[in-house]
Image 1 (cartoon, rainbow, N blue to C red):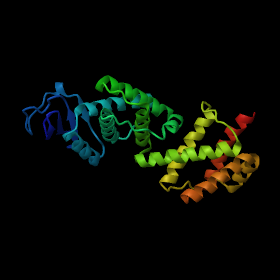
Image 2: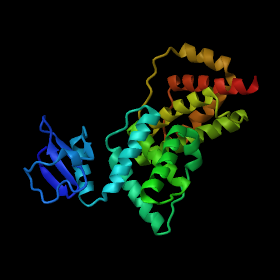
Image 3: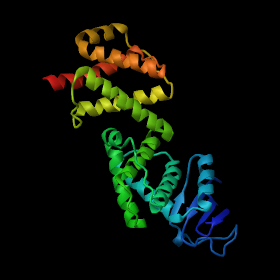
Image 4: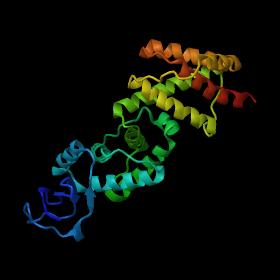
Length: 280
């Protein structure tokens, strides 16, 4: 392992067999070393291989003056998240999560804890990711001896959701807000309370999550079904379709987004499943 760049005593950059840069971390790995020197692989703690060269450059910039423990801790949290969720996470999560945790800890030590206005919604919409956030707080406590408030588990969960959906944090906030608005319309339109442990509720939440993502990113869901199918569905589930019309009107007025007939079809079916289960 030959040093290509030295970022600090604990972080170097090497070139792999494909001449691609990899960031290597280890306590004192570059102490009294120069570019071109070999390093002892026994003291290597982490090797980061990011598929995006721009992300690799950003990671190098971050690590130049960044406390090593935050990156190591974030890496452990990400490993846990991958295991818990069984999903691939975007490479740039190591950047955003490390920076967030450092900022949160520094704020807390200054006596400033940020309230998360979306905490309740995060618990409802992203249960698994929030569970990862709670475990992350335990890891932070164990490794840094800092007790962050539960709101931070929500923020960490949003970073993970952001990574899964490949969206910006601002978009994830907006997506979550749209989801809450749709749920409120359904709740008051049909005068029901949701069984949040129901598989039908979970499927509905999953559907409106991706609907909200398309809305926020201004992508459309192209119609492929014959409109005659929608005609059948709206006759069969009249109350649910009325609710979808209210959602359609609200979304157009607030976001200037037209819900396609295909989307209306699926929304009606999902809402009908929840509604029919409640009244049966």
